[in-house]
Length: 116
Image (tube, rainbow, N blue to C red; front, side):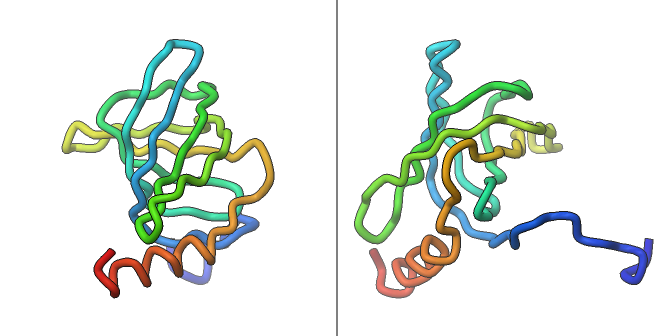
């Protein structure tokens, strides 16, 4: 497929940024540690060490690097893909209000520049 045939279907832009995330699956009383691959206003792509089935609802806690505060959201796993490394990439659709993606990205960049 060449570039002229590709059409972006996402409603919100994605920003590549790595932020630590703690996911809690209350159904299975499981806590999962992850990092974001990218974020948008309505979703996240996470890198995790364990398989997480589609349809699972998670409580998410994004740990900001600058002030160590947590941003808490609820989400649902909408896709999962196993990587050659044995890790998994999972797509999360946020269930509550939108994530303020741009300020999070800017805070992450600034924290890395200032050494937080």
